[in-house]
Image (tube, rainbow, N blue to C red; front, side, top):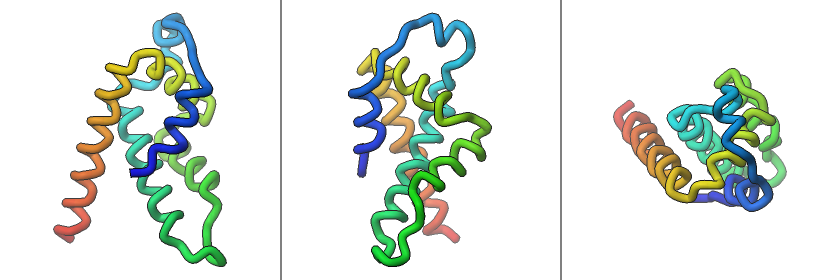
Length: 109
């Protein structure tokens, strides 16, 4: 799977525990859901013809809107969680489970 964008953001960002206490941090399940949706958007983008590619940033904005968050909210949460590799591993494991479930659902249709 393509983890370039989330990993890139992790490398660039860091934050403190006060943000989680103030409620500006997404819960781990929501974070996993957003990451799963971003992975699906990246996969769709990757397999589009170059001349017909959609704007991946537009797709990410739609994901944020669907989940009632902002890009800044996502980035702040990613910064917070990236300070703990163990927690990020838990989130990515949940993301993989969600992607597997979505794949199974799409095959079953």
